[in-house]
Image (cartoon, rainbow, N blue to C red):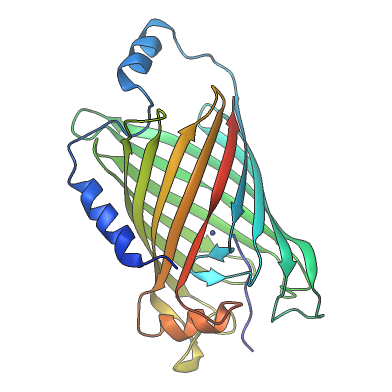
Length: 296
């Protein structure tokens, strides 16, 4: 029996590829700050406050895509989140609201607006190295609990441990993350990616363009079967993602970020697997939307 998994998500992909290649060949620019010179000076003059930070955000997206699998169809989704961070530790709550759920794998057929997932994440992040050419090498680790709707995922909730490294090489960033699912869908996930953030000459905004690849090494043939041999679990490259996010600060604490992305199967057995698990039976997906974040 194939387990249907719900988790965390008119455009030509060539446009995003061109943007990515173009951005990676631009001259080095600051990645994170609106005005790096001003903020660096301010940080040097005034030590950072020793207090927790809080971030409230919400995504309005055309479709919910989790690791290449479409977990909504013919409806927009709303995904609120809240994060509290202090001295490298963070706690996050995230949820998914489908404005017109139409799940083909539901135990009981249903339609309408539904809240069908809540995720809880505890994480820790620490810089292992800071320098000039390698601006930062950061360790990330944590735990994710996926509280899933039983009507859609009768097999139960999901849990993952994750660990990874990210490197800021001044004009671009690299990241690799390993996730281990150990509850009801045992397996290993590996995500590797590269992105570039550069300032734009208007609205004090910046553009984040990136590409990532996901590999799945499942331990459970019932959860993720090999399409050509259902007795064996899927193992290999799964999906890639190209994305672009335009971050626009509209207030000291508020940022508005239009975004667009393209998920694409990496060929081979990944194509029929994504077709089988996506609610819309597709293996390639274009999505778009907007994020609003309040951070203080």
